[in-house]
Image 1 (tube, rainbow, N blue to C red):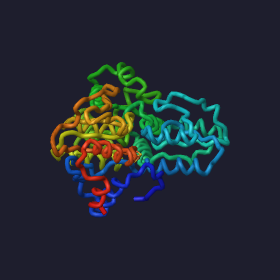
Image 2: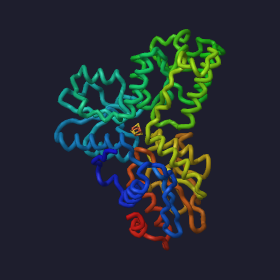
Image 3: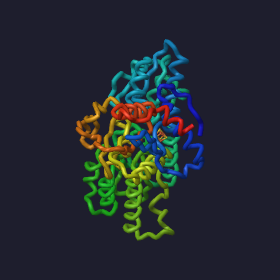
Image 4: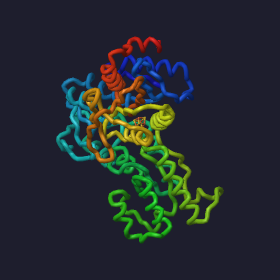
Length: 408
Ligand code: SF4
């Protein structure tokens, strides 16, 4: 895979050594076992795949290059470039300003942007409405478009199924930038609906079968269906695409449910299912699949707790948390600063959307076994920071340098 030029401050000597060794020993990416970092009294099990993905590295490279090449120019980002607070803060420190917040609330009016300015499009992509607005203002974006190719792949997939007259069902978080962008592109080509989870998929299934009164659809799916959506005819042929970072098991369950609903309603068989249900396969990206598979494999290791590092509004990170917390105490943190002491950790509860404090999070035993992973927008340096903080509580532990030697 292509390598990118990202600031060295985001890299970690330890994690780079581990990842390079694992990559070299497992070129075909078949081994999803975690990597043991044996520090003596502290055993860290690192997931096989975690951290910056292709799309994030690509976006970071473009953004920092744009800043370097355009001194004195006004540079805007449509919204957060990726869901990592450190990266976004670094860009802001270099003078980049955000036009909207992560939910689309306007922070700086589009009128304030002139044709001489630069507008970076984030890795999530953007809506056609915003693309058109920028075009009308003669603002060049092609060179500064960091939309991930794996997001564009979902748009292409939805365009293909739209051409075959299927309605597009988008499994994603309705307020997430990527889902808003995908919805906008899909709705340009075909009637489209967003379902956020299996509960909404079950509800949609009832509208397909006619069990629910058609009129209540417009309330149940408020702000989640395309303009002019006609419940009487737009649920007769459907195809499902996903936000790239959803939980693989949910994605599969939703596609299976909707497919089975069409089979039952229209009395279909495997041979003629395509009359009503497009075979799209899932549109999760490679990083989501790799990171979730690596966590599932890591969870087979007996451990005392798990730490997941990443931005609190990061969708892919929250799904890694979701997998871990089903099995063991899990702490979702966005930097080592959240480990307040050897006793206390301040961590994010993404269900309640608030931080909470847990005391005595480290068991008093030796060795302590900790599983660690991070989201696709999290710099490896943050993970190394977390490991260093944990090590500071164990006087007799090996040093990072000693452990790195085992991977060189
Ligand atoms: S998580 Fe996937 S879709 Fe999102 S930026 Fe990374 S590679 Fe692209």
